[in-house]
Amino acid sequence: MIIRIALRNLLHDRVRLAVTLTGVVFAVVLIAVQGGLFVGFTQATSCVIDNTEAEVWVASRGVRNFDVTHPLPDHKFHQVLGIPGVARAERFVVRFANWKKPAGGQESIEVVGYDPVSGLGRPWAIVGGSLDALRLPDAVAVDELYLAKLGVAGLGDRVEINDRRARIVALTRGIRSFTTSPYVFTSFENGLKYAGFARGQSTYLLVRPVPGVSPAALRDAIIAGVPDVDVFTRDEFSGKTQYYWMFTTGAGMALLIAASLGLVVGGVVVAQTLYATTVDHLPEFGTLRAMGAPGSYIHRIIVTQAVVAALVGYSCGIGISYFLVGLAERGGASILLPPGMAVGLFFLTVTMCVAAGLVSIRKVTSIDPAMVFRGA
Image 1 (tube, one colour):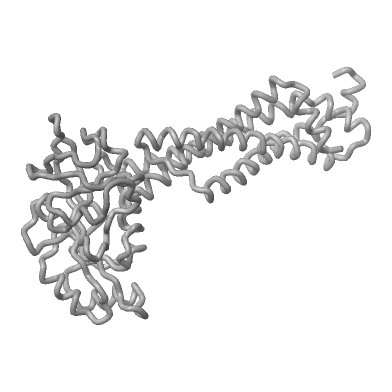
Image 2 (tube, rainbow, N blue to C red; image 1 turned 30 degrees about the vertical axis):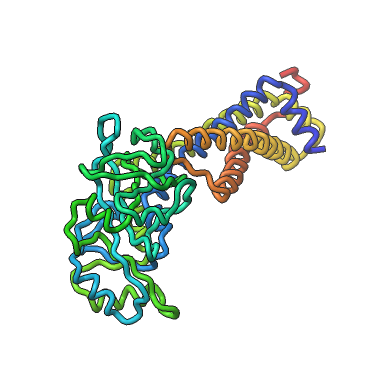
């Protein structure tokens, strides 16, 4: 009976129902997009770290994030190799550079140079060409999303990086940079050339422990045995980079504030529309009170209305959100809406709608049943 009354209340005024559902859908889409931007930006800042098989990262002293650091001299590499517990250590290069388009003009890129033999730090999600081709001189891999931005059509195109020749031999899909500079993967030797480093230098050392040695234990051993370097486990360095870009720069704080505002605005919109729907049905609730219905019975009707509005509004809103995420992906924006976030948004929507319904309960329970007989 409660569900039937709740549905009839909602369907009695189709226009009001449409307004209510529009408010819920708007709130879901707003929170999903703003939250997705925040999640996408956060993961993009550390995607290279998170997708490498190296459990330990060695950097120059004072590094604050993945993208900007000072070169390491080669003797640090040999010192790390001498630490007990090290199974493999490889040099790694990360440096911003200029990409000269074939038709003229330049773009900023971020060169990532790795050892093709070990594969530590290699690109992932290859959709064209091959990783083996990156062992060749002047060979690079770019993400297909940035082909137009870089002024190229695809495999085989030739360009210049810092006035040195380069040829696209592999394409990736979904490796987004949180900056305006796309990642360009190449071999370590090519990376030295494009970065302008002298032979014997590198940006990071990627280290794997022998079986049975934990990353944390190996990190401590390298700190104790190699002076003047910073050493992190993969998770530590990923978190450090994310924290730097999200909480010490204006861009990250702007996204965090926008995501919070999306939650607040969405909640206000839902509360306002559901409150208006409840107030419109005060005479019906007054009739129930006059018939002897207890306050708890009316409470359940209002909560049921809110849950129904939440289910319908969420279903439409999450569908629209995934559609917008797909459009953003093709446009280059990094918006992520993982399943866990979608599930959390569902419970958040139900909570918002129920809370909005509870706001109007006091108005309903304070109704004088005599209003029905007075024609109010």
